[in-house]
Image (tube, rainbow, N blue to C red; front, side):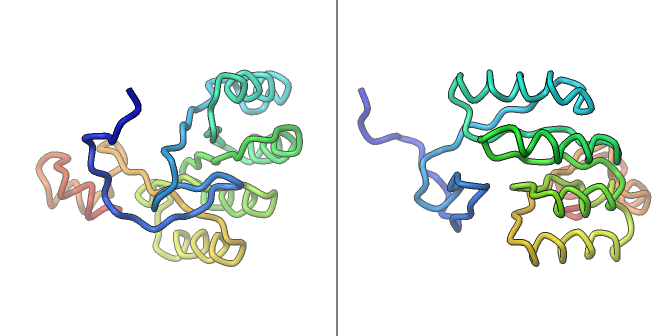
Length: 161
């Protein structure tokens, strides 16, 4: 039953999200995301604990504003599983959760905005050894890419990233 998989994985470099290896020859890690209000620390911690008990290796938490960033810092102290902060729009939120010990950042450069803001996030992550997951979607394409491409094609998403 547990023979060689017919799926051929793309060779990649191994990174660490907290204590969990991702990529390279690491086993596939299971990630899930909370759907609680991040500002409700107790509810979010309870949900993370349930996810961990179910076998999740990494948990992503939405951090839409600075209040949620501060709550994220408290949540991080109360759980064992590595946390990914899903950042929306404000690069200062990413900088704050980096200070608070996030294990990984998930950003959408098109939502973060100007190159200097993206650079600030990248620099903070590099200085602290925090990996960054880049995510893009059609709803966040920059205005110049919306003009260049008549619809959100894969090429437009790649260019945005």
